[in-house]
Image 1 (cartoon, rainbow, N blue to C red):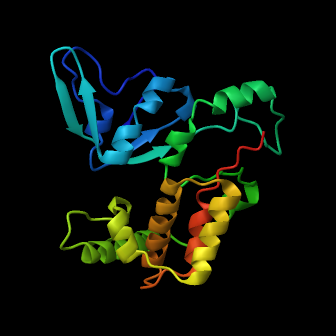
Image 2 (cartoon, rainbow, N blue to C red):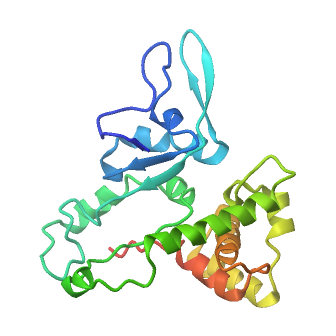
Image 3 (cartoon, rainbow, N blue to C red):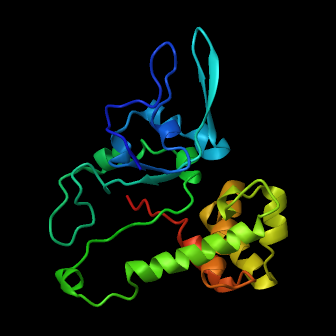
Length: 234
């Protein structure tokens, strides 16, 4: 896992030494306090998130490095961190919140597959020792889904659903009429892009794999859509 401080840049110097996104190749890149990174640093994620490589141009050379990683980014709802809190009042103005959130552009957000709000956790839940799924059970579910995908793509140049191109999506993500209507409604109501459409299908395919379902069901589409609806409610 590559952890990056907010003062670090991904590539620097005249010789374009490999940075954190290449060091995280085939691994996880965790960016905490996402809006605190410089805007140009955040925008530099566009190419690697889309293509799995990063091209760096310098005076002496133009170099392309491998950069296929799992991006995990976290951010507060506002600069003070308490917007929407039930326990502490937010001290930010609407303008400050909008400026803070505007650091994450639409094109970057569109490239992040799963986007969710994480609400405050009550003490009762924190102290409750009973959990729906243990870590070992979740690991087993993930391993099953990984095995399914490796079998699906064994004769292809990819390993996971997230790497499917348009042709593969059409082949492996067929859906029924009800699912088509759900997707149509989501795209029209929420103004989702063609990229979002493809990501919803890939996520739904993964949900189906976790449930060991050969077919993508309407329930899988509904769940996948819910992961693309990050609420900006200011």
